[in-house]
Image 1 (spheres, rainbow, N blue to C red):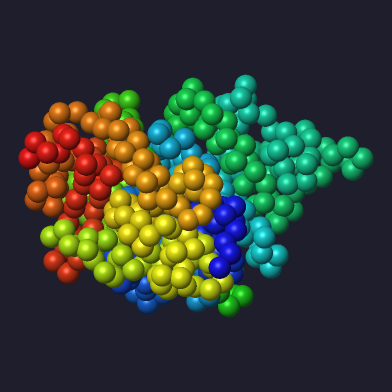
Image 2 (cartoon, rainbow, N blue to C red; image 1 turned 90 degrees about the horizontal axis):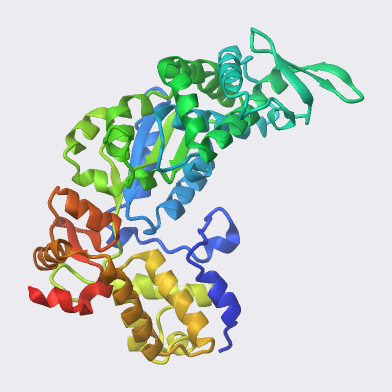
Length: 473
């Protein structure tokens, strides 16, 4: 049985995300719902398709970074589109400086992405967004030293763009004279305008501060304008063409958790608790990813009050039960994920024939899955490094042990004595308290979260299991 090592390595690249709407990528998709405590994506979907009264819902989705949230959200996008919804998915890290995010940044990013998406639908025409244009004009004027209304601000590559007091755009185009924006051009020009301004803001703290001083007092007005000039008309237009509604999925907002605002408030609490009421005011279906550590915050109760539904959690794939015994279902699915990366067309079962084509022994594959702790990206990262180190098949179990030892040593360098004591308690009790130190352990992926019929439970990252410091328990 011949296996292309380079192709196998590319399929294991941890930086690549499976897009289930792509037939080639779909071959690699494994549904872990049976061992993750429930059909979480189906729940998010049904909140939108079955339990929405007025075409608006607001969902929160969380889990460890790298556990597969993006893959599941792209699956949600695909299924919602098949159910007749227009879905706008984007990764907020592309538009925002994730360590310094304000509510106006999120709102403008959403508006830009929705405008861009609707611009691709030829039949959809929205009313002239005069209010939003006025706000953009004011922002551009404020930041004139950083932002010029040049060709990047226009959908036609226009130069010398001008905006009048009504927010109407015109431009002098070489060889064409003066051109005025039509209604269709009028709303398509807003997206490049937002993109130009926010790109400058993302690159400069000074520009962000200036922009926020201008936008923050207008947050309520901006929300109302986005709803009145964009989202509500868009929903009506989409329904005319047989679509059921508009869904916006904002990914990667779970990465805001490490920073603090200048006045000391944690970024995550500020955005999702203090400004949560505004996040949910958009007049369409919205799903935000949320930092997992917020579930252990003193403000979690307030967060629940802000949103209509509790956050959906995507836990790790359990390869062991909480008592330490092997979990056959989780182990099977993780092994299958590895084999499918090697043989996507065959969709193989974990049989000796397929395992032997990749690993020196069956036990080597089992050790890989156990060391991963059911963290999908961690398993792929180990496998990717392993392939590049061995550069031949079958992969050696001895190389895996070398990689694990090296990874364990790296992780131990940043762990304090106090954190080791907390890790020993987690390893013993399988529980985590609402404490800021535990939040750090979870954010650093030193502690993993799982779910079974008894509820959520926790354990240390298995890579740390051999560390001498744990033996003090």
